[in-house]
Image (cartoon, rainbow, N blue to C red; front, top):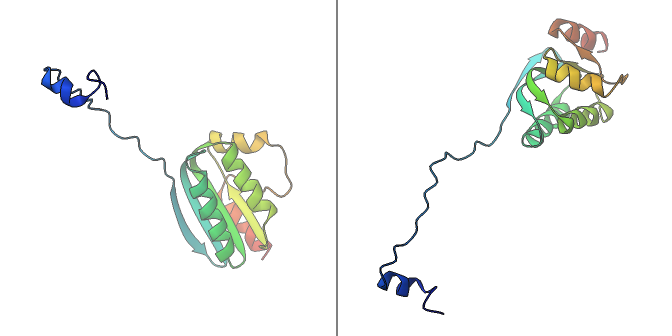
Length: 143
């Protein structure tokens, strides 16, 4: 080891050690707020936050877990979603396409969620409502 890069020789020559302190707080890991409630035979999953690359695994796990546990119908309530990226849209489409339930409905009111869903075009399997009551009526009629 050369004397120039040896830390002991540098301290012997009076060269102070360089300590870098990062005053910035650690980056928050993005999360979603996800809860569930039952409405008769219907399981409702309520999601709020941003659905993007950082949160899509949490979104997907919650939706597919709920789908596996739902008795007759599933409502995905994304009225609190402030951003719905392509990964989240793909997850919704996968959920709808793999649906083995009698009924599945999505409730979306925010511009971010509704616009993202509209961009992918009219999909007859992707049933979207603005009001929870309408979604509940839809799934009850198919039960």
